[in-house]
Structures are given as structure tokens and as C-alpha cells.
Image 1 (cartoon, rainbow, N blue to C red):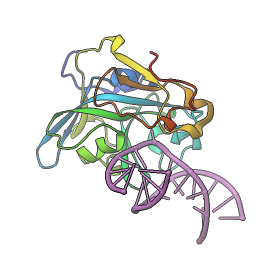
Image 2 (tube, rainbow, N blue to C red):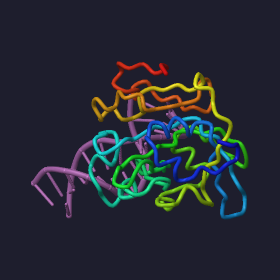
Image 3 (spheres, rainbow, N blue to C red):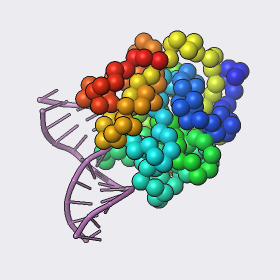
Amino acid sequence: MESGTVLDRTFFERDTVTVARELLGTVLVFERPAGVTSRVRIVETEAYVGPNDRASHASRGRTRRTEVMFGPAGHAYVFLIYGFHNCLNIVTEDINMPAAVLIRGGEPLQNVEKRTDGPGRLCQALGIDRQFTGHDITMPPLYLQAECDLDPLDIESGPRVGVAYAGEWATRPWRFWIRDNPWVSRPPRRNIGRGDASPGAV
DNA sequence: TGCCGGATCCTG
DNA sequence: AGGATCCGGCAA
């Protein structure tokens, strides 16, 4: 895709793991209410795939909180975790297929004062909270731009972080990051899958 | 209605 | 290692 192109709905209407991988290297743009535009290059994502994925909030069924995950692709799902931190997801796949990609970390490009490694910090740095749930991520003030495609060899994958409660699903290598990028979060070892699937393999 | 625990992060 | 601190989902 041409550099600078805004990612449209068709980008997000695809297989969630594919979207998670291809979001790496794209640029998250936030046109702040104050008129300042912040830009962050996405370096780490996770896929949450369908109603059977026990790591996904949607595995509990359709509720007020998860309703947006069952809706059309390309909309934001922001939830509050541990009473402190907001986490930004982008809904993927078809209507009634609850799936999303968690944006876990980014590299500050422009007008970003705070750290953006880690899903909570990213939202904190940009000022994104649950009010953004339902926002159409193909439009201002919050959207994504394509950049040059990454070399596949620069993409690594491994188990998702902090989902040990999800049994077998915790071992799926649905976390993606850019190799050797300093803005990729480094999770505590106890949070890596069930301890039997080492990250690093593509 | 009450309780349990979380897709996290900071401090010590 | 432990705490902060809100709220969703489930059991009662």
C-alpha cells in the first residue's frame, strides 16, 4: 500500500492474525482537540480471535462492554484494566464475528511526550480512554496510515501477554512485534504463555 | 447485590 | 514483590 494512505475498512475486515501482523509499521495518528497532531509508529500488537478464544473478552458472549467487538470492523474498542489503564483495540473481521487487535506498543514519531511502549502507556501518552470506544478508526481524529512494508524477517511472534488464565489459548503465538525495536514492551517472564512456549520464532 | 480478579504499570 | 483502584461478569 502506498505510504501515507489511510487504512480503510477493507484492511480491518480480514483475518485478525493477518491484520495484527500488518498493523506493524503503520502509523497511528491522533488529531488532538487542542489542534496538535500526534503520530506513533506501531511496533507491537496482539490478535484476539473469535468467540472461542478464552483470552478474549468476547469469549464471555455479547455484553454491553464487548458489543462493539461484534460490530463492523475498523472501530475502536477501549477498555479499562486494573482500574487504571486504558487499552486500545481495533475491531476486525465480519459483523457478528467478535475479534480485535490490541495495540500494545508504539514508537513516538511526533508530538508525543510520554512513553508509548505498553498498551496502557500508549493510551496514557495520547489521551485515549473508553470514550473512544465505537470511534470509526478510518476517520479523524484517530486513524492509521500505511507506511513502507516491513521485511517479513523483521517480524517476530510469540504468546500473548498476561493471558495465562486462557489455558491452551494462551500458548497461541498471536503477539507480533518488530524485531530489535526498543519500543517493544518487555513483559515479565511469568506472563509469557504458560512458560512452555518461548517467544522469538516467526 | 457482593465478590473476585483482570489483555497493566510503578515503586521498593 | 506488592499495591493501586475501577468495573465487568457471575453466583447467590
